[in-house]
Image 1 (cartoon, rainbow, N blue to C red):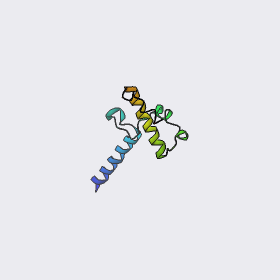
Image 2: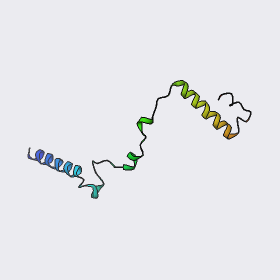
Image 3: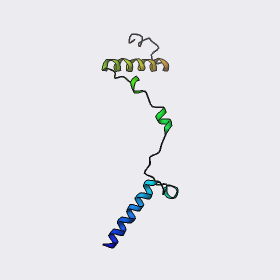
Image 4: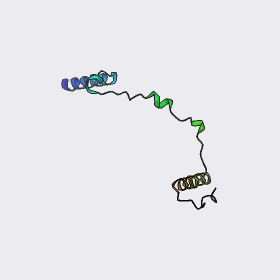
Length: 84
């Protein structure tokens, strides 16, 4: 019974050391996640995001495909002009 109590006490002390960051210089262990404030600053503005309908997605995809084909010289006959 004493061994169990001693084991639980050691486990609690280990968790305390981990949670406080005391083990970070020794083993690289920490419960804190990496902080990257530059990622927070670079997040998209949620108000500018909008949901597209299926027709809008299809139109945008065909326009992108035509632009890529024209840029690569595959649609030189003007076949994408009718799609616009």
